[in-house]
Image (cartoon, rainbow, N blue to C red):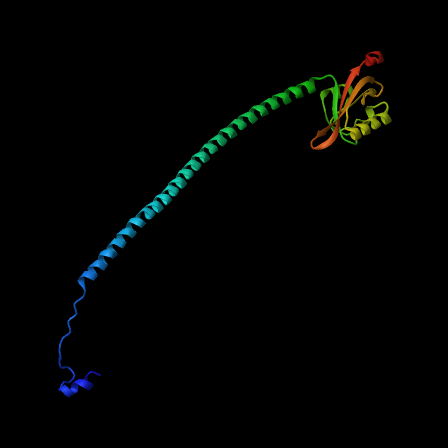
Length: 219
């Protein structure tokens, strides 16, 4: 587009016609750089405390989290130790209690076996589920037998058993019983009937105390 005018001067493409000199305003450029530097320094001083505060904030949170985790770990360890001590204490108490229960059971068994009274446990059909030696010695009873034949007044005895099972209360009454081996031998006894649970089933515990005469029975 330039050659359309300069060809009249004998110039062609590739010839040098002249030069162009450009001198930038150094004062304005320097002033602009100076202002830019001041703005950057101002922003640096403005952002540095913010960045420092952010770093401190998250560092404190991290330290707090680590401290809480350490405290939680120590508390868990202390709780575990306390639980172990508690389990050990309870185990010792249970062992002591079991030992005491076993001792009491042995003592009760010895008392039951040595008692001169008749003690027996019977089900609803009057079958003997358990009895002491007194039941064998006095009345000739044994486990697996039936106690219905020893009662002189069977209807009264069956009525008593029904009331004990229905009312779930203890009864005491004088009765006349007879030896199942020697039917002619009779005893005046004081009967105590109590509802109990034996091997997870409701039964009746019978306690018979011997009296030689009716007068002694009344006393």
